[in-house]
Every structure is written in C-alpha cells, then in structure tokens.
Amino acid sequence: MDTLIREARQCAICTNVTTYTCVHPRVPEGDLDLDHRPYALSIVALPYWVQQCGTCRYCAADVRLAPATARDVVKSTAYLAFLNDVGYPFLAREYLAAAHLCRMTTQYAAAGWHALRAAWKCEDMSHPMAGYCRTQATEAFSMALQHGDAATPAPYEVALILADLQRRSGDAAQALAHAADAETAAGTDAQRQWVTQLRSAVATGTRTRLARALTR
Ligand SMILES: [Zn+2]
Image (cartoon, rainbow, N blue to C red; front, side, top):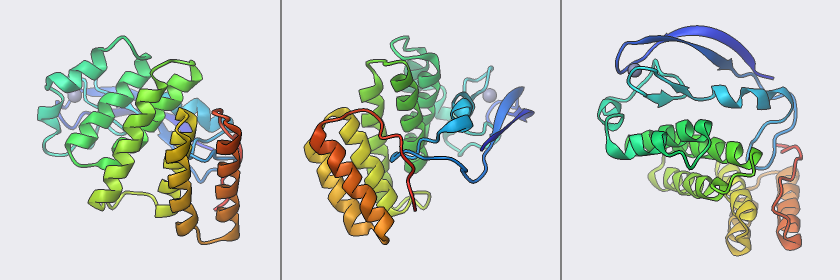
C-alpha cells in the first residue's frame, strides 16, 4: 500500500515552497480494477497524487519537476479555465489542469493518468462530469500510443484501460473494439481471462466497476 508523508517541496516554476502530503507508492498489495484503480488503503491517497502550487497554481504529480514550457501553460486561459470551472469537484479540476498541461507538453501518458484520476473522483461523487473525464483519459492514452510516449503502459494494459473506460461510459462497440486489441496483446492465460470478464460485463450492460484484481 502507499505511504503518505508530509514534505516541503519547491515549485519548479515559481520557487515557492509548500508543504504537501506526498504519496510514496509501493507495489500494490491489494486489488486493482481493470483501469488500474487501486483498492484498500491506496484509495485514501487519491487526493495526493496531484499537487497545486499555492502561488503560481502549477498542478503536477510533483511540483519540483516541470518541462520547460510549463511556465507558459500555467498562465494560459485554457489551463486556468480548468482550475476555475466550478462545474467539477475541486480535486478533479486539479487533475484536469495537470492533464491539460501534460498534453500541451507532449506527456500524453501522464495526461491519461491525471484524467483517469479526475474520472475516479467524479465517479466517487456520482458526478455527471465523470464521462467527460473518461473521454479526456481515453484521448490522452490514445495519443500516447500514437506518439510512442515512452511512459505509455504496455499495449495490453492500455487496451484494457481504454476498453473499461468505454464500458463505464456505455459505449459497448468501442469497449469491444479495445477488448479485441487487449486480447491480441495478451500474453498470458490470466490476461485473456480478464478480457473475457470485460466482454461479459459489456454484454450484461453493467457500467459499474468490476472491483476485481487485475492479474498480470
Ligand atoms: Zn509555483
């Protein structure tokens, strides 16, 4: 499970120092859902997988790190629009802002994870913008594949994540298309069994989380 530790961190953009609750992830001991959402105590860490500088409003997994062009992005109208949009839960705004910045700096896989976590927050609140966040995650992971982002998860895992995002959004056709990709990329019987589980969930029309371990 993850460890939470309070740490002072200096913003890479404005040099402001803020104390954050930081996540020190370990190898997951519990279950992961098909889109990699952890269970048990790791869920408690969801608010801390993104940090926002209180001075320049830079949002990132770690404010000590920033690509060269991030300074311009945090001042942009589009970036601030995500942070200021009261139509989303506060935490989802931070994740969506971080996702936007990552997209603008070609960190597509990182953008996918941020958007996915925004979706988890909205789903926890039964918030209607969960679907938008899932769409953002889908687009970001798809771009990560297209651009060969080195941080992209393995093809099987991306396909399964995309399939599960589409399933929870109610798009059975797209979910099954990604499930076929996952089956092609699967390398073990356990992985193929998860594709079968996913297809079964699509067939029954369930849009809830499968809440089962992903065995890799
Ligand atoms: Zn800052």
